[in-house]
Image 1 (spheres, rainbow, N blue to C red):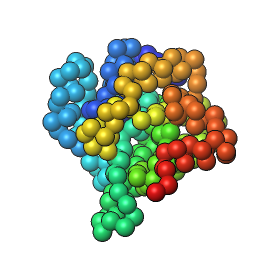
Image 2 (image 1 turned 45 degrees about the horizontal axis):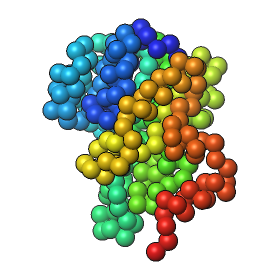
Image 3 (image 1 turned 135 degrees about the vertical axis):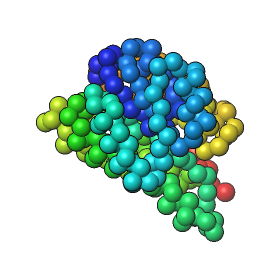
Image 4 (image 1 turned 135 degrees about the horizontal axis):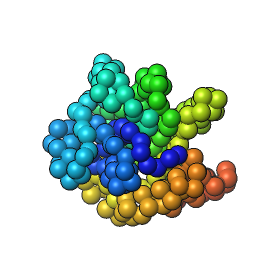
Length: 242
């Protein structure tokens, strides 16, 4: 991937990994557009990062996803990079009374939205890169976030197939595979134990510059290289019995 002179859309780009990507891509001389649900978060991001373009969108709505694609085609026709970063993580049990509703919300945001956006944006004439943000939990799930882990396993599988299908069109498909990082994913304070986003971003851009298409770091790097027995051991460590 060429790291400069791109026009890039990052979904969920107002905070966490999405904002860190927006910041680094902007510093490298790219035009960056971010979208998200919360107007206040988008305004804060725009204030911190001059030149950033923002768009308020509810990606859980298929109509709003289609509207976003039309807006990009009209206002930013040179867009050549789509970063599917937006996602939610819910800590829950299958026995919770609202489990099915919350699971549906998570599946819509983490699977339906990026799959639909990818399909829509592949119709844009200048698209050259699709970057999907998955997780180390795609390899070994954390049982307290059962649907989130499953959606990331789906998204990794989809990304592998997407890369294979788009190779003949010359479109790069890149997978960012972060471990747990100190963000507000899942709720404030839940990931305070985790390493900062900055280390992951530094490593990710070094790997992108080297031409890698699977970008892993820390725990996710271990999971990417793990065999079946190592994955079982990881699951047991993360989900102790009793």
